Image 1 (spheres, rainbow, N blue to C red):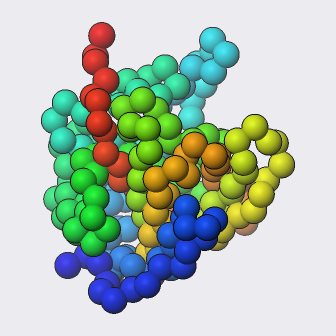
Image 2: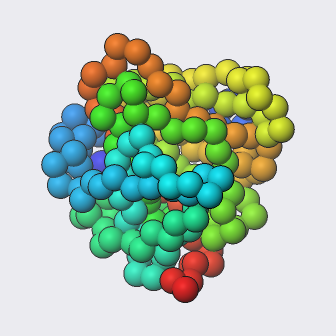
Image 3: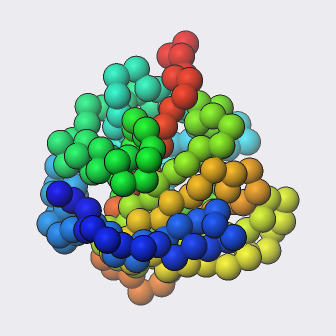
Amino acid sequence: MLLLSGMTPEQLLDGQLSYYPELIRDSDTLLQILLSELPWHSDSVRVYGKEHTIPRRQCWLGDTGLNYTYSGKTLQPLAWHPRLKTLNHELNQALGLANNSVLCNLYRNGQDTMGWHSDDEPELGPAPVVVSVSLGAERDFALRRKGQSRMYGKLPLAHGSVLVMNAGMQTCWQHALPRRAGIEAARINLTFRCLANPAPLF
């Protein structure tokens, strides 16, 4: 078992977010295993016609054929790591979901970041439920309403925590992971999701 039992989430944004501050069992061990065993790599995205190396490392794992396209890139899934396959199964059972893939991001220190975005790609369907697992250094989950530039607020995501972005949240909100000075330790973020319509390779 990779999940602690009997945990009750904090409900935020009128229920659009459910936060479990400590849900992952033995999160220290899981962090070290994933740091050393996942095939982390640098990638690039196309922004306004130019290629930019993303400020983090990542990998995409999931069921066969679940290609995922964002920012002009199509990611082909790698085979499930056994720990992540088990974790996905337990999260699906606990939350009543059918997630079939996971985007893994490695933030090496406080200078690695994720810009403003919504997880609203067509492959995710009209109302995706995204389950976000945080391991390692505490970082801020920043929020703003779509169409606005001012940050609405931020939530520090603890080591071993799980944040569920419930159906409808991606329609109204954007989120980001800002830089944070003084952070030297690594953080892994696992976002489990269900691809409804796999993207073609060509």
